[in-house]
Length: 449
Image (cartoon, rainbow, N blue to C red; front, side, top):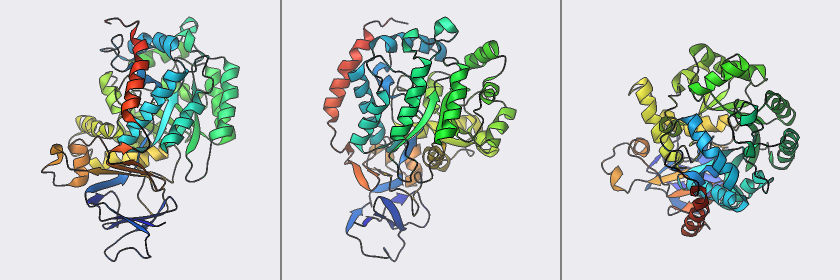
């Protein structure tokens, strides 16, 4: 069936003032004043809606929804924050609580207009060797696209890392499961609902050999690579102490300086390093809310783009952001960007582009992230009916400047996945109750910090 999304209040696309036509999950026509070129079987009146490409989240930790605003971790910077939470994740995270955490994070993202999400998964409790499979199952239930990352921690505090030993996995187990997950879920076709990246957690909690061997696997299976890098000065100090070099130099030593890679945070790079990142067309996922909450610093987004790097956006883990709202992250990127570069240097067009096309490119995808003919029909549609939008003159700018946070409609692959602000087929009240109950066990060892 051809569906005409008709007469939008505003749309983030050129040459589509009267909307778009969707057929077989793709955008097949941008509609001008003469209307659709061929008959349509269904029309949706979008005259109350601002239509943008579905948002693409390129960095998250779904399981961390269970430890939001945790008393042991609030008011701390990254390393102390991690050291407070690692033992709790190592002790209390189990199969059912993990599933609920994933379900809630994905639902929250979807309701904010996100249609594709990447989770940086690096915890695998003993009863959960199939954690990646659980994420794939939960995304499929919601009808979302997901970039599954098979991460790992294999360097604990006893061996010079900072992670709790209970979060570690055996090296051979990690590599074997990387190949299993790639074989099962890595779909390189246009329109794929699952892709896979390999994602050792960070230089301070994985071995050099794991970094080297995942780069080799990525070449073999034609997949992406992801890790945390350049987030804090503590990380700089760690790399200088243990490796005798800065984080980006270490990345080059282990074979990760190539266009398969996208990095989370990418804050503390000097201009020479930014040029090197751009030269290799590396992606950087900007996580503005987390970076501000943990006082990690300001990502130099404009400098990175000018150097040739790809900039995307992510909400980051729900324990350092305390929500999984991608649209709120877009606004935070604008505000932090202007504080860094000036009021005219970062526009609403920039941050929306980072959250859509830029994020898609970080994930290696050229079939999502734009409203254009041939692209997947992944759309987020917002109304401007709330008091916060009254008086707004530019509808597209209003989404960012006035603080949109919940989509009224979301489409993924031509299918409605959110209608009237609620995810199709999901009992949100029940999810909130069950997730809240599961989260209580993480509070049993809480201290005032």
